[in-house]
Image 1 (cartoon, rainbow, N blue to C red):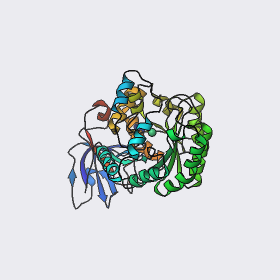
Image 2 (image 1 turned 60 degrees about the vertical axis):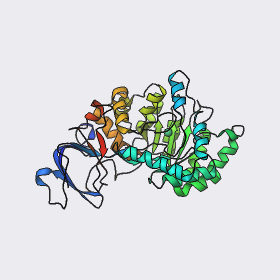
Image 3 (image 1 turned 180 degrees about the horizontal axis):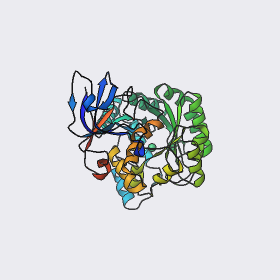
Image 4 (image 1 turned 90 degrees about the vertical axis):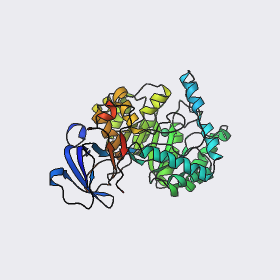
Length: 384
Ligand SMILES: [Zn+2]
């Protein structure tokens, strides 16, 4: 039993921002699941009691967009960008070269460190994409390693066109939708594509459609990187194909917003404000999306190029400060919202039957996640 909970954020859809707040609460965990939630005063007997002494407890963060299988360092690229060099997606090639030359054990250690870093900040579920291998063997390897750490694995062979195929994009598309998909699919739950006509390295609407349709035919769920560097077709394509999530959504037209609002039960707009921060780009209007009826999620996009932060609390603070969300809306988007983008109901909320994936704050309320930005108050509540 976890007791002494000053504020319990259940995300049950009730009350302000759907946070379902309870005070002076307790909960009982059995076999990794929540077995009971209620007032501490009426809690049943339990074998073991963990008293969190007035702290806030919330669902562990669901980081529904991350690229954790990579080697190498791109600090110099970040530094150059902060000195004025524009981001165009080209730096991905640097990570591809370093990742291809790393051993399985090196990549496994890097992955383990990154997942541990996330847990230490309150993240209990992370989606991990491939996309720095870009050969049949290297993409399958990235997904096989990622699957050792999470069930939310995503095939992103269509991250960029690798340099060796720059003169023959069609051949790379055939590879991604053919042998590479076949090798990747057994280790992946999702397929994703960087649909971005503003980058010469990424994929057009027609190319992205081919990747998504092939992935769907192979039994994978759909996710899209869309509308990051400028207005584009990513959102419309995601909605049309019933993708679970379209991610970035930095540049949206009114038509895009209408389409997302109409598809709010199917397609979630996943916002990645760490990317706007790390590329010094304008932030999307998350508050406006919520007012329009769009389902939103927050995730880190942790990756070596455009956001090397694994911190969901940092993302929550940015979403509040820069995208107009209230502290409660941001917490909801980082838990229940991102769970919805993974089509999961067993995570991102605290309810009887849900996984006992919990985060605890060295603070009395969820507001402190953005109020005390940059202070390490969040961690996973380890009960084993
Ligand atoms: Zn990404």
